[in-house]
Image (cartoon, rainbow, N blue to C red; front, side, top):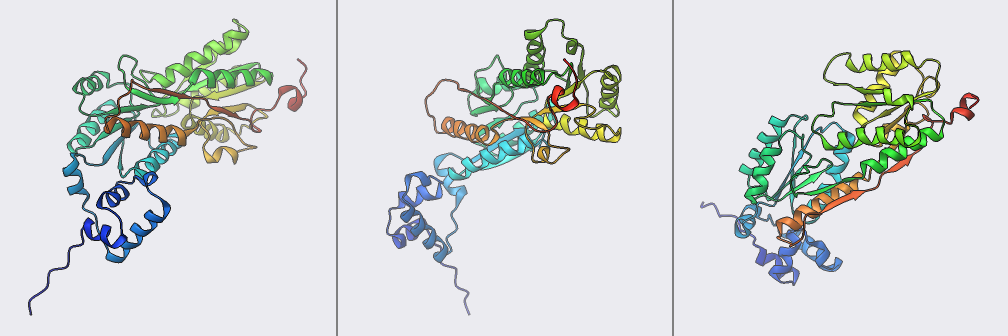
Length: 353
């Protein structure tokens, strides 16, 4: 008995069964849901399920000279800040019919270059990059080629006119330092990973110094700046011992430059049997879910990560679609989330000013 070939369901069949035009089904398949009524979306979805229609995304991409793939290069996938941004970007990509391909560089410039080249080989339509800061000449080549739209997230390349989405790091750092000073801490330490060429670390580092100088140019906390490479054993612990050892008789706080180093500091304090806030106050950038559950809650600078991710995706899709616009810099304001790790020195410890 001759085997029958399965009937191939086409977009025309879906449109006819749903009582809409082929272009309407095409808009649905492209994720342009905002252009369709709820009733139309429901009818098309029902017909797709009934007919078991499988859209040919490859053919669709070839026809429009698009892959409907967007590459996302991130510096550290383990950072909660990064995953939250990717979630926001993914939501917008899905709504517009794009898939997000994610590559993690571990802050390694060579990996960044290799992943960008690999993604280009997969005909990605655009790139969202959280750069390591060590690939500027390579990014300049991409910029001059003009073949791949690029949006930077969090970290900038000052000499290139890429779109950039992030926060106002100076405003956020000033806000945190001002709050700690209002709580009457005598010593405020800054703990950061190596600054190198990473713009966001530079901005926060300099903003911390300037924030202290605004109130007292001779403030002792200007001495309390610690740079720890987390890949090197015991480097963070040595920094912590140094700060704690020379400030035993003073009220003190540690300000962490991101959530990764904040977690490492917490673990190091716990291993030493140090209490928060009784022995040292603690504040950090980002607001990971665990921050509210540690000690009596960790005070944090919360970034609007979902909005940042969504804005990155919206900008790259506009660039892919050829929307004419000047280079965009979207700088969000961060919020201070006050918790039990930074109580007022006067009220909590009953010290006299």
